Amino acid sequence: MYLELFKLHELPFRLSPDPQFLYLSKQHARAKAYMESTIWFTDGFVVITGEIGAGKTTLIETFLHELQTDVVIAQINQTQLTPTAFLQTLLVQFGFSPFNMKKPEVLATLNQFLMEQHDAGRKVLLIVDEAQNLSYRVLEEIRMLSGVESAKEKALRIILAGQPELNEKLNSRELVQLTQRVRLRFHLTALTKAETSAYIDHRLEVAGAEGRRIFAEETYPIIYKYTGGVPRLINTLCDTCMMAAFGRDQDSVTMSDLDAALRELQWAEFASTTNRMLLPDMQASHSADQEGPPVGRILLASEGKTVVERELKPGRLVIGRTPDNDLQIDSKFISRHHCQIVTQNDSCLIEDLNSTNGIYVQSKRVRRYNLNDGDVVQVGQHEIMYIDERAPRPRPPVETADGEAEKT
Image 1: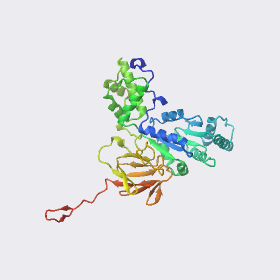
Image 2: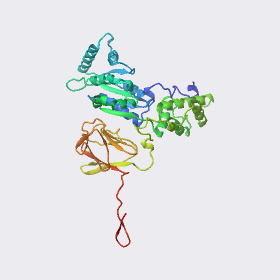
Image 3: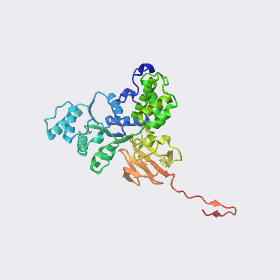
Image 4: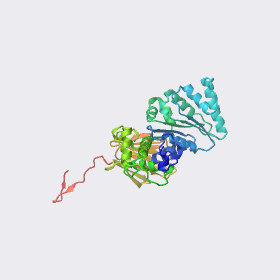
């Protein structure tokens, strides 16, 4: 291969998940923090979604690599199972041989195991990857397992990771009870243009580049244009570029190598395809790359005084107590990740992220609420006022030369 030519000790763009190559973009860092919250909180139940190639599996492997020894882990990747087969697979992960057990015996064994681990001071974590393939019946079994608890806390922490279809299932009427158990939900989006460049440099550095610039500067925006910031696509294209440079016996990737790679892969520009990795139900660019005037803005007030004003452009704004939020409110009444505002070109939605104290509109607790101009949302001891910049505003009267107000 090309390792010797590029003076690298590892292949930088392998498709197999490798925790040491993980690049923590803002989105990936938040998703990882959500996973970690399953260990911090006694009711940890988190759902992480993202398109194929978003980096979910690499995140999971990194998270597992960092867990303490007092966590007992069951990881299930084969999800096209019957309810009984799923429960048996779970028991296998815990060291049992349950294949001659009937379902009541499987459930009794699981419940007993969970309580024994809790009594021994160990946390039990279930991680299901590719969870979008789980049937409604299996998801209902997971809901029942999530209810196993001691006098003070749940006995099982759960992470479901999957493609966007998982969200569609969880939003269905059949799974209302399961969705109410979920503490946090997060959709992993693609990398921005700047993050794509940083991602490429990061992987090269881990592979042994030692600060050397291997890809020509002008290749980065073209790589983003053809990959849309999808990590797996970036890996595929960059690896093919390096093979093209290797074929020319050159230790740097130029635009001609990139052109050769694109011809070989027969790729069209990513913008010409549907990018579901952007914010759900939105076919728009990342908020960081948005141009033009804001769609709206919010005023954060405390004790009647505005403390923060923030413009809203299409994208997602997460509000919570910790610094990894887009808008931090340092208050004991605010949850770690309390709520989010999802802005589209024609609407703005505020959504509770299963916070402890909730969000209120006109003294009524709401889970989701479509914001209208002038709405005030109570968040802990703070208020958020939404101002719609698209709403028509009355024009002030224009005074004429004779001192009368001109009608408009």
